[in-house]
Image (cartoon, rainbow, N blue to C red; front, side, top):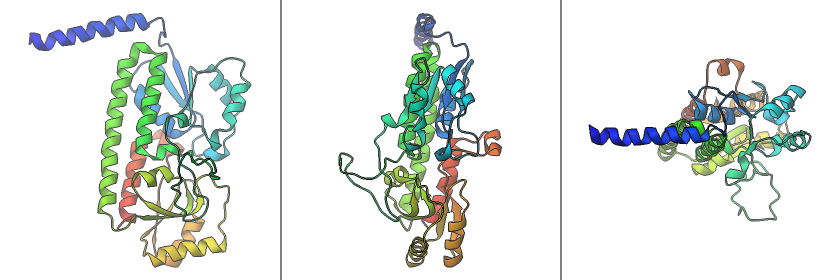
Length: 315
């Protein structure tokens, strides 16, 4: 018993001393964090779970498309007043630089796109882009949907943990334990995705919609065929695009045609009507509905739904 108690007492004393020293860093009174989209919000929520006096709020209105987001005066006030502002970076967050430049005080920020290895959006339908990242002649846009990779999600959670711990040393141990538990859950989900892919009869996914899953597809060695890149502004597909999608589904006997959240699903409906394939949602998790938010939905739950959809698609 003494052998067990002594290390615990030593750790308790160390944490106590560490906490006292950190009290001057931040008193943990209403530590306020603003996250732009749902993945960042949820990763942060998992990290700060059960820590009193710390809160995170999501900037993107529930049910809204991030590509169309423009901050309101109230949003700018919230960013100005928060202790930490976390955003992805990339095309959908181009407004951030302008906002920060016009705030007359230094804002503590975390730009997560700087902490992962970047991929590029496919330029045309069905393109598999495996170009060297150092190719400066590359004409494609950087893909900002970094959270669709579970490995990236782990990196983002760890980076968020580091940043919050800098602000609140008093609760660093809690943040790190929460992050460790969350990354373990992500690893378990990652293993499930790998098992589904390994057991699948095919490796090709068809999206009658935008394709914001370049990171996800690369992570699991999947091919993809889609109507538009992830950040495409097009809302209607050309007749040639529709014909290519239908031909792809028919020629390879693809069982599932995917659409993404908040899509009008019109293109997917056209393709399944012509092919007899099943229409299914594959969710980017960039945002959620009010009902899902109120029910406490998480990134892990959304990706678990994607796991089941993937299982159907690879049969």
